[in-house]
Amino acid sequence: MSKIRILIVDDSAYSRQTLRKMLEADQAIEVAGISADGIDAMAKTLRHKPDLITLDLEMPGMDGFSFLRWLMENRPTPVIIISSYSDSKTVFKALEFGAADFIAKPSRMALADFRTMEKELLMKVKGIKGLRMDRLSKNLEFFEAKKSIPVPLERSAFDINAVAIGTSTGGPAALKILFSRLPADFAAGIVVSQHMPKGFTASFADRLNNISKIEVKEAAEGDSLEHGRALICPGGYHMTFTKKGKKVVTTMKETRSTDKYTPSVDLMMSSLAEIYGPQTLGVILTGMGSDGRAGMLEIKKRGGYTIVESEESAVVFGMPSEVIKAGVAERILPISDIPVEMVRLVKGTGRRKGS
Image 1 (cartoon, rainbow, N blue to C red):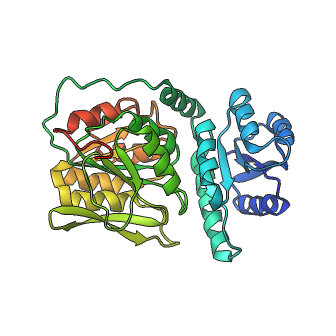
Image 2: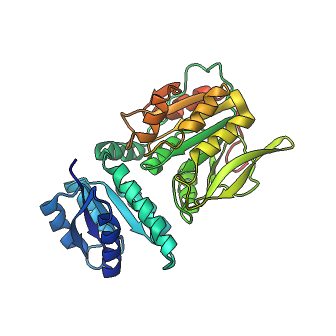
Image 3: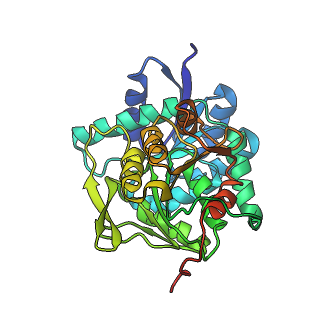
């Protein structure tokens, strides 16, 4: 098999050296070139034609955003943003410009933190190798078109009260499409686990809330599931649920360095299905790996309903594919059709945002 060829773009000599060492530790990866600024990165992109680019956003001369705009117009290539924890807002701006994913730089010089970063970087590089840039671009264009959601002509026999959504790479763009098209009176509670590090999910939830008719917020310990509200699992935690009187509330569990996926979609879905049973809807969107397969199996086992994003729109088809292979996908739909199906499955009237 041919190696994954990577261009490293970063103005810090230390970061370039560190990234090169991390990447070249894996024999399946080759560092094709290194650039300290956007102008040099343009030339080396055209010369080396890398399979993937790691990109720092803050650079002298041509910054990361200018390079990213040029790249998406002239040679669309998967990009992983290398960012500090303080740059969460700029990271999501870069994802909206076409970057595929991001890695957080360690906030301290501890060896364990660098090991965690290396593990995550190598996993994402290998997962993104098969990323479809045409689908990512199409999803971003679809969101910008702001098409209204058609009203389902019929309701289903299901009476869904809780929706669990799991996603990874490509998820921010897919979730923007989904949340921008749900009606204000959506009569179910929604919970989301998006693979994302600690320190970024609050900004992400705020961005979704700004384009959504329902309330979207980063979940906190003891938050209640309510119709017309979506809770985003905070990075660095797994989210599960318990009954407290008539309410269902969140319980947060800190992740460990040995956890393969964080936050865990499987834990979230299994916990929700245990409480809501046949009134649970599971949705798996774009992403790498198999997280969500066990959770969707549990939802199906308890009589709930399952939807996965189709290969037609999934930027990375790994997570949806694993659910399909397990034989528990009720519907396989492009991201544009998933909000319509969710509305069809949910009956009644929910509270409106801000009420």
